[in-house]
Length: 190
Image (cartoon, rainbow, N blue to C red):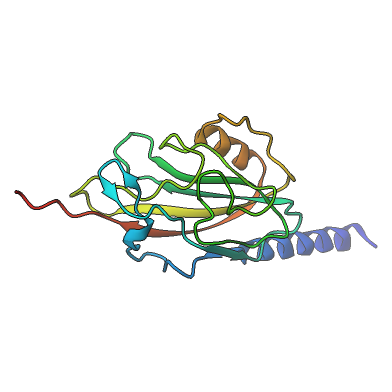
């Protein structure tokens, strides 16, 4: 094969990989992208009184070479100067393509075998529900599944969500996201 044909073949193979990665999609049967989310996903604490249940998530079209997944939920609108991590799950096996409702229960009993939670900004390893300040405009919550090139992320049990994010991004082959919103109105004066 000539050098030109080899280069063209390599370019086509590379383009096919990008097309496959471009087809990586994340969805939820409970949440429509750009919609307002249900109060059951709200945290129970910090002045919020929801059920603190994580939503079901499902994904398809992971890039070739994916060896595991990580799932994160992040609020860039939290008034912290650095956003707020609501969920971080790592080491989801490559043959898994969904998380069940309430997979975020603290303790990890509802996670797929091998997966684990990372401590989030509420200080727990599990789902930390929505809880924007009352009266703020609805906050954006970015749900993301990350396809990783490693079977397992070696992260200490007391790691922060920021450290997990660093390790996730350092090992990412691709990601799929959607954003939804949640807000709380001001309480009526008594």
